[in-house]
Length: 426
Image 1 (spheres, one colour):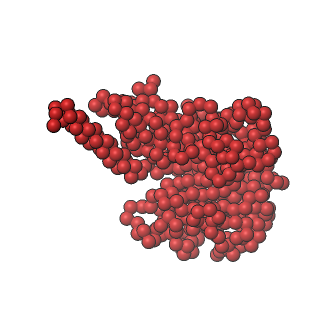
Image 2 (cartoon, helix red, strand yellow):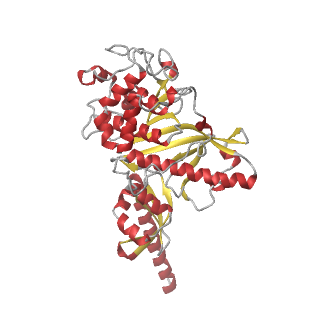
Image 3 (tube, rainbow, N blue to C red):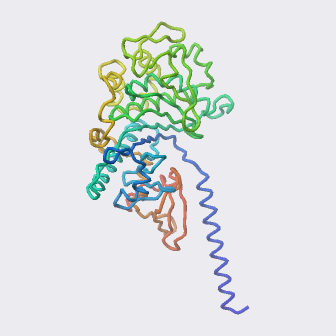
């Protein structure tokens, strides 16, 4: 073997070793999950062009045909907007999904702010598109999904506390207060779906940012509190510790229409609760006197008030209390579904309820925004890395500048370098 050939073979072996090490590190990072419990909100919109509902994938093909600036690729045809939320087309609707927001006081307000900032951003990009093509484009509110991390207490018996059991149990607890905060007279159901490492509560889109944030705050408080119960089977609702929870009598949830889970449809009740008079019509509850829908929602809210307060900002906490007490009207009290649903971003828009100087961004948000902006990251050993994409919700894909090799880092790993990353970008 010549000296030249020997050197080539040596370089080939070294290159293969580096690639193998990089691939192994990437697989190890991908297997890891985020360690901080989090909340996230998703919203779906029907697209109406010139008065006719259309499939966004048929008209636009990809979100890149709507958004003019650079986007960070996530997976498939989903991309992260500069606001941090992801945008993609899902079975005939446009969907926006916030990044993970770690659970702490004000987390629901942060998630709501992220979503509504993204709605405003998308609306502005659609305004440019419609002016360019001479078409009228509306976003019609369809649904909202509230996601909360599932982290059962350490040592819990899996057979007694599974995420599937938790979803069913929550379907008996959440409907009344969520109806009062998030639903309208044309709503059809409140759902709960188990999603491996999280619980997803589904409801109609709410064309009011403050009420949506109130709903998210109540959901995270109730879900995290029930998650700490000693077991998740329905019989626990009959025990003395939970006797103060009013549970609808003659109520039976049905399987969710999409994916696994359960939904409290209007047909699951003796009569339609979405069209009932919230203060007058009486509902039979287990082990108690007949109550109005507001009384049922209020008692459940009071039962979980300490947990709700743990995650609430002061403004939202007052709003939840005001709706439950009747000082602020519920959308269920209006004569019909509000017109604001028909043009989200125009008839209802973000009014900067929580400016950053009052409610700073969460740490996960700050990491993701650095990645979306393409800010280079300097790690030990003098190496520089440039973000190029996302892998799922909890990992960022980087390209090492020196050799253009690919590296995947979890958000939790990047949190340890956040201050240096932000200082470097400044």
